[in-house]
Image 1 (cartoon, rainbow, N blue to C red):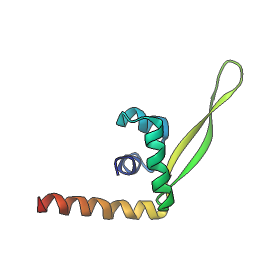
Image 2: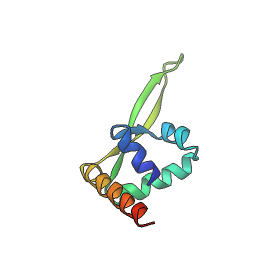
Image 3: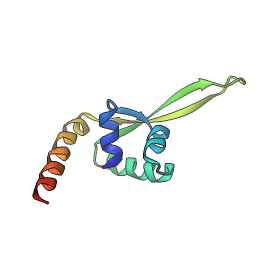
Image 4: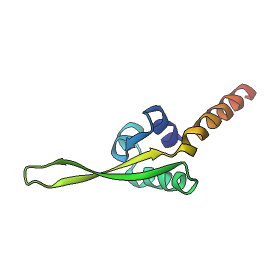
Length: 88
């Protein structure tokens, strides 16, 4: 849920490396969360070329992107979270 909410808060497209930096989680952990969210149809992975280094090689950056279903599901998750906090 942490990864999902962060992607939504940041506009629906975030690099996996940024998610790792912000959450303090390892890339494998974030990757596993993204895989679970992807299987549910809530996000996709998109790879893009980054900036070229001095040798002309570009590092590939993997982004997590919300799907239309993911965008609508986020509101439902937040409502559910608020309700559970009120009940506590």
